[in-house]
Length: 397
Ligand SMILES: *Cc1c(COP(=O)(O)O)cnc(C)c1O
Image (cartoon, rainbow, N blue to C red; front, side, top):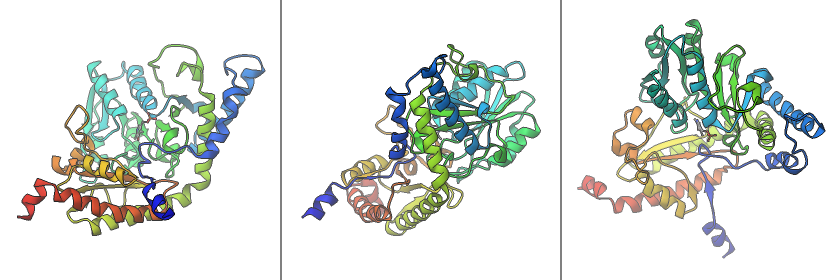
């Protein structure tokens, strides 16, 4: 009896790319900074000094992990703000040199919408296409460069299909032409090795809530010498690059999350890759008419993205939720647009397949039995939904 109760209440979180739970050690590390060490770091007295010290330590830890120096890190409110700051900051600062930006067609909205905004401001943007696996071809980057190009921004790994881009090659092309290169590292930082010198990037975005830290805190690496124009006006914080009183508790939590990642990363990568491959193999074997989206190997350790033909992604998400499984889809029928994921369309999926996509992202607290449970439940859900699907009925005739 007890066992069935447990089963019914079972909840399995497989949407780590959307956000991660805070590690309890992170919560503990943040605790002192709410009511005890609460000073404003811009003040002169000891309350402020204590806060400044905490911030300095945290910045040092994050910089070291990234291979950067502390002066090259500014704290922001998250990945979205870091991307906005990088794109708009470099664009406005470089306006006298040129007005052309190169990016990909599969970026996170915080990059692509910043680009669209800049187009309205008179900038020209090239959106590079990707191959069937979601990979950018460095040669295409090279060919898109003009004498007006001031910035190239290509994400390190894609949040939907997990495709890991050849950042090193693209960065070296940018460096050769003396064009700034930015990468959105939100899905890779503290998950796979990310070192700014090794990658050769000028700007790099991070977000704490994607790596078991708190929401609302992130950072932007800005290489020494790179000029940015802040898009927010206010105080002199963060070397005048980011006004507003610093989120000390968030910063301390971010640093703790990075410290934990440093300790766990290698093993975690192995564990997630094993679980990912088990889930992919299991789905492709157990569910007829299913296909993997993205590259089989050149992908994030925790990312599984499949299309399950003849069913809407949203019906699957809701039915899986009733069985206690949380995952996501690139289908967007409930939102105002009927357009499915721009990423899935960019890799050449027809609308039907994009609408029938399902993304499971695995993380630190996922167990092998969770994967087994999904492999038990998903085929049943698919069978039930297909039995109600007119499209599937048509096919069987
Ligand atoms: C989540 C995410 C962001 C946005 O980060 P926030 O901290 O939620 O603003 C940006 N880029 C990628 C690739 C992401 O996955």
